[in-house]
Image 1 (spheres, one colour):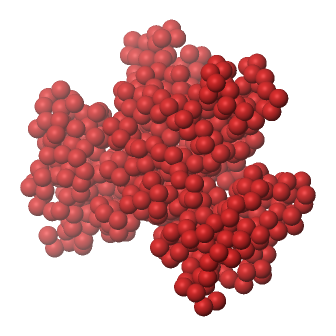
Image 2 (image 1 turned 90 degrees about the horizontal axis):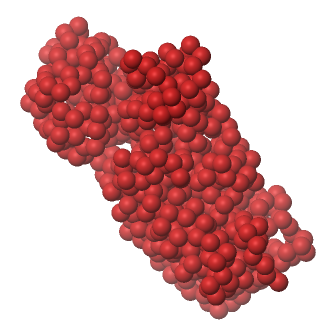
Image 3 (image 1 turned 90 degrees about the vertical axis):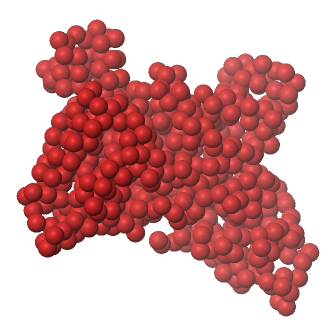
Length: 310
Length: 310
């Protein structure tokens, strides 16, 4: 523990877990990525987290001042008992306490979409801006908002749920109990399910093979990405109108199909972003390290991003 | 100028102008209301403003510390040259400078929907809460947001444009250039136009007669208010999901038909507000004095509400 100061950071997703060491300036010094174990119990997932963090730390000699974590919701916040929708092995898993015992440093946990937003605001496409929406379009659709220079918390710490902006009032039922939410239309499994319902067939009906089919010119697959991107664009236009944003940054699994998705996002956004101040907002793809940078920023820029009270 | 301190306040709408004197605690001491002159030029409108303010002031002996103004947008903010959509006689009218010359006090102008939001947050249905949306549903549809205890400004001072949240992606074109915006569906003239297109007839086809017809049981008129209220409820559900709000307060001309509108607002909101934190948000009607209270609050609670920078 005699190296220069820095932070440990962890990004826990449904398909991968990233551990990282982040310097005091927000730069990623080292990182390690492991697949998320599924169906093998809570301890296996926790062990994978420890492994990823130790692997990242073993490459450096920093003295960790804290460990920031991004994890799928819902969670008890800020206490950090997590029950991620995309990680059924963890239900009320006391992630903060377990990590704190393991690494003997202070631990702060926030929603993974919030961490992506923070990372993009601090070091990515939202750098230097005061009004930014970050989005994760993946197994679910989440987000976070920086408004007038501050991370928005909301009444119960739930601000940022762009997945439940209504994009199609008569559209599909959403797992939230509502109808026509962005998440019900644009989450990865919904995009695949829509393509299958339209007649698309694949030995491996998942997002990756749908993207491959779309790139090969399959019309149903292309229509599926168009429908997803249009829905994202509609939701973005609505939120930009209310919050007068400068940039929207999109990450998550589906953003890896940015070539297919982004033109449709722009199309939906342009059709509905009539007001000049709305239309001028930039829509970008997130960088791949934003999640861990944002998790570390729960410490390294805590005045801006760790608003437990206000 | 030897009386107790207080504030002048002005609320300029498309149909009426309200002048008021507001005490330092946010209480309305006196007020005067005049119809808005239309089609008789910019100076006639300005004279009506001066008349309303003088009439309110003549009933009290306060020493005015400032004059706060709510006015329809767009406007150059904070310089206060106004071009209200609902007031064609004013285009780039230098309202702040003219009022400052006339009353010899500092003048601050903000959007009328922002002032309503501020007034409801300070003294009305949003009092004591930190996360509130205020809405004006009238000739246009506007709004304002208090988030984490602060009025949201946005990148260009335009935050709060809930009228341009998309509620029906395939719906009517909006004057903003977009499509299916809340304003295109729910503004008063659009509600009347929809009823007329469905076959409703009236010697005086306006909001008041449509409301009277609905109260008399006219099915088209009832359907028109239902459609309007449902659209408001959809937009409210979307914004509450993103901002995790505690209360939404609705004012403006159409709120005078609250008996017809509010059940439909609740219906639309309930259908789409699936998440528990969204569903728990209260939806209320605004009080009649919120506009002038909020205008005065641009001075009397300036730390919270007059965010020219942040």
